[in-house]
Image (tube, helix red, strand yellow):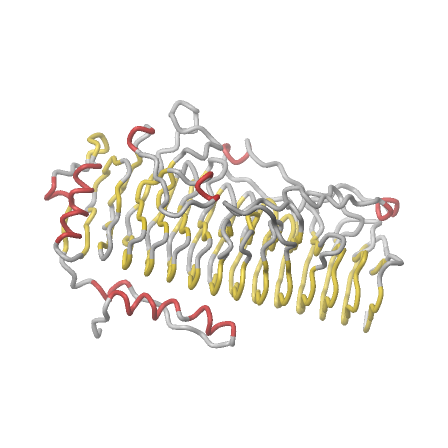
Length: 501
């Protein structure tokens, strides 16, 4: 293979996000473009893979030597290497060989608190990591090895659940040209990996498993631009793939494709933190299975802008809610700001979704201790005066197998609170008065070729529209043994066209 300079090959893999918005498939990056680089084994610097000796100094010395000599690969060979936090440098590529395990220390003292160069609100949630980088370029973590967070489920360790002081495995801040490929992450005690204000990020073929702690997200992309998350296998207690916006920058030009995601929370999510919003994002060809909250969650609640979002070809097997879209006014401030402008959600296209709805199954005793969520209706909901607009849903096939409480016709009359400043989630309103979709405070909605099959008795209508305007519904099919209505429109709706029902 023709050798490609490191900077160039990463950019090749990441030009796909913008191209995909125009319907063009991008080229993937390949890790073998830098195999000829000089290698530095941590064994030559005193590391011992017995799972007992703390190897932080040896690993850091290897990284520093590699960096001083112009870059290359730092090799983690087969063995179990106990470590705390190390700092990755530009043009240094951390490579875990098959059989290699980086085992996290269970003590805070081995993970010094990191302070970002440019203050941001996400510093409230990110403080420590096993591998940290600040302002570096051309860095990677690759190989068939394993990151083990050493989470102690009996509560005996220093890292307790839901503690934002816990370390992530990877935290890269304001870095550029990043590749994370082939590695496995397990037993995380906090967000598994976080990329904050980075450019050109490629996460490819990684695996996340045995994440039983609360807040152990699979992948967190925060205020980044030009990123791809693809071919990953994620099984996590908290959100699977999550985009967040804590600054005015938000996330821009990204692609999420060909992933398999299972989580007790949300499969693929934008939010909740959404100050800068999300622009020009493609989500395609993903499988989401046994998900406790929403398969797809799109949320703007902190004044950002969500626009130019394309979601297509998703399979959802056993999700509590297929689609949750929320424009709210929680309005967390960007650091240094005095006010928040109203949020915007517009120009969103969702197509070719096949979903089965039911309460998520749990396969491990630790999972059965957490998150006993029930099924909730898909929703598209803004707030008075701030409408979600220009949304198309087409070719959607949803089979509701069960998981709802028994609902009667009277449940369709329930008044739903606005809950504008609440944490956005599928269950935020309680039981909704429709079983397929609930639309409120929206305009220019287009729904085409929507098939809903309700397999449990339900007296509610399939769709309820409340304060919805200038919207078209074509080819809508909803079957229910109680023969309840397909649509119920409140009197505050205008310009609604119902065709071929």
